[in-house]
Each structure stands twice: as structure tokens, then as C-alpha cells.
Length: 144
Image 1: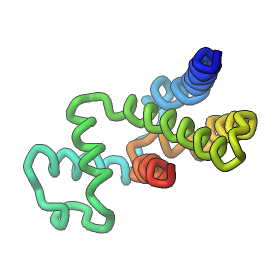
Image 2: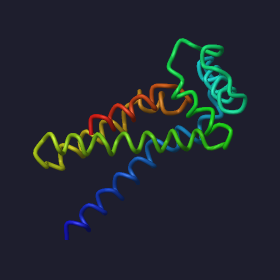
Image 3: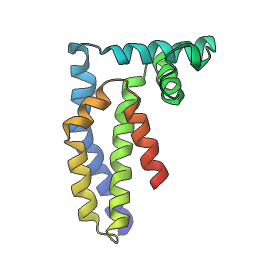
């Protein structure tokens, strides 16, 4: 019975997340302007991956891991979908963390997941290929 509850909660989270995040990040993305940061991260990331450019020669202000991430998935053509997946995975990690901190109370986890999913900052940062979503995911993963 517990397995069915876990599966149903994950399905509900996934559906809520898809209904809230995906339309804004995938469909509406092409009607919004591209920010200069995104252009720089994509060009430097693809230069890192394709040309083995040293990180000190292209946008050395930030650590290169997220730019490698952006460059690799931009070359494959799935970078925006990966960012939607990062947002979903970050929400699930938040749910698991809060559920663990609250002594197994899943309602607190669901509330935090919903707040995270409907937050406009999450929409805006995961819609563009920026460094923050990668940093958020790996920070939450390290805490978990």
C-alpha cells in the first residue's frame, strides 16, 4: 500500500509540475527575448565542449561546470527540456528534504513543493539557460 501512495504522489507532483512549468518554459520561451547572459553561457559552453577552450579564455567570472552542462545539452538540442527536468528534480528534492525535516510529514513536503512550483522566480530562472538552476539542483542534492 505504501508503494502505491508513493507512486501516486510522484505522479501527482509530475503532473502538477508539467502543468505549471512546461508551458511557460517550452511554449512561451520563443516569444520572449533572449538575455545576454544566456547567449554568453551558450556560446562559452559550446566552445568548452566542442573546441576544448580553457575556461579562463571565455567568461571566466563564474565556475565552468554549469556552462559545460549548458554547452553539452545545447549541442544535443535538449537544453531547455533538461532545465525543466532540473526544476522538477529540485522540487522533488525539496519535497524529500522537508518531509525528512518534518519527521515524515508528507503534507509539509507537498506544500513546499507547490510553493516552489508556482513561484515566479522558478519560472523565470528555469526558462532561460542560466547558471542558477544547475547550482540550485546540485546544492539541494548535496543537502539531501
